[in-house]
Length: 557
Figure (cartoon, rainbow, N blue to C red):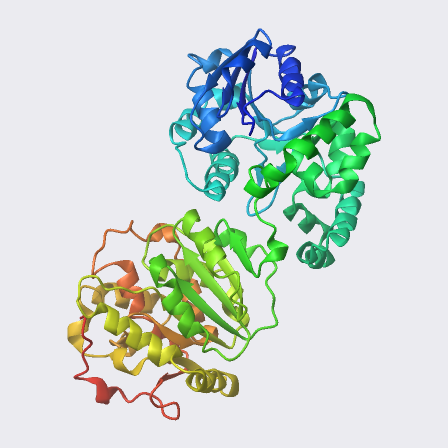
């Protein structure tokens, strides 16, 4: 068995700790070659390294995954090895640790990529502090493609999503088997539940009422630190820092382990805790905002079902978030806010900015930059998550860069839909009191003039016929800008189309003629076909009289 290891190292004091030297000594017994990549190491420390270790010191950017890439680039022919071990220095190694035991479990597993511990937080992945890639993974097209695309990212959370979670998910998409050495048992679930109560992780506790499997949404290295320590004789340093009982458990073993832990707590713990260098993804029990890797991941989660009102926001222009939130504060009832964004960095910026937004339960999910606001909306709508609400407001961060009137039009729409508490409450009550209320839109954006078909008429007719409209029922009736309040039952027929993100073209800035532009024009016809009412915010007592709008124009069209 030919093995090679890439070890990522960082130390605040630029030294090699006893723990690191111990781990490298273990690696020497099982590896033909060890490549260590450090982002902070004094030259006088190099003489302490075991003979097989070749060390490279690089600038401190990109965290561990960029160190892994740096080390992999120094392997001329990775294909001659049976296994590549990737690991870092974020865990404590006890004196009873046996790397042979760990690798025996790896070798007996069916996995092509085998981590020590896995997680379902946000999406399934093996944790990257210790992971073994077998020959099947090393010779795959996936391996080169993945590591060639690893670059320096500024935010650690972007790295975790794109590279830690992304490594597992992209490997799975290439038909590689991914799994872990640590296996959850009945005892594990019991311990995880007890620790959730002890640490007041209410989110996991509530989820466990429905199924204990939801406990795997938590971080096993925290919830089950003792189980993992008892099996593998390792413990993540973050668990040592955060759980006094972990320190006592290790110290009670006595000997050099106690001294190593004491030295860490005295000299390093406060620094790493403050910098959050090796922390877990997110303690989601501390924030009302929840982040999801994709709309599929969101749809598999338990959503609080107590609210009857929701807002669906596609946020492409991050700089408009504060403006939009200022309008959302006019909603006088508890509501759920679903925000789609097109990058992981944007997701975490939203999470940070909405930490103190207590008006709503906030769910943020990532989407491809396709189909403007319509594709993200449909991807969420098709999951059925929105079905239970009585009233939903659909908005997005519209700029209309092709027109100097874009800002005025956007703010006018926001004002009509969300401009005052009394106005919003009147709209919500319309849906609450009338089950046949379908869509309530901005008065100044309702268009029926034939000139606004643009290049979309043929596609609109095709869509409408597919969901059961007759040719006579198909006419141009829409709220330009695709922002309005609606009853999800009124447009439920859209699900029959089975439209996915893949049906939309990549974003090219086109102003007309795309699937998104066609769908913008089908909401009203479909709702009317299903005998639902269409109103404008200007008159909540009477259905729209189309003849009034024959000469209506909007400033940007």
